[in-house]
Length: 337
Image (cartoon, rainbow, N blue to C red):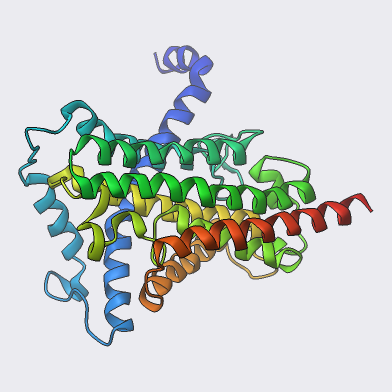
């Protein structure tokens, strides 16, 4: 009987393994959001010489859980003049694109389970980096639709800012990544990690790393580039009219994008899961680098004031884009010669 079941399922082995991996990765990403919120609030408290969350559970560990329960059961209010279909669709787009983007992110070497080699990724794509940029770029549609459908001037301003910011800084992001593509000769993220077995790319491409990381912070709408939701100017930006779980979904998308961007920087510039002689498992090495970059995200929020909007655009087009083009030109000449 068992042999018959195994024989029946054998043609679908890869489909089953792929589905299980997708569910595990999606669950892990959604589960890491409360932990990341807790870590940010605790670190922000320390940076600002206060305690942070410390009432619910030991060290305030129960605070994100209680906040999640509160948002889950909170009433979802939709104003009568809003476009209800787009209003519901917008947060779903933000979360969906954030999770799907991570599908092409490898986070360790393949492992063998019951004689079956399983790769630590949802999908190993030859155009992995292009896939990440394409799907992550679609997330801005959720923010723009949220601004348009809310019938609120602050929401609309936040949506317009978000689209302009994404367009401006995605160019720098792509040009900085193009320098690594020229060196590696591949769009496959695993090939990029394997090309760094001897030393990480940050040693030979420090300018590309700096440009990519700055543009990545702007792409994820994190401080000091959080102009689309600037509280002092736009109340809460594109999610001003959102409450309950829909409000939480925007933050879930933001924190998942932070993890994805940190993972992408790790793969392109920090050698991925290469430990360079340190005796740790590859997945631990990868996770440590990602955690360090997440810490830097939080550190930046605590350190720098929000940049003015006109200066954000000027900085993107007049500083970052020319520098990324110059770096790409120098890298191309170096590779050709």
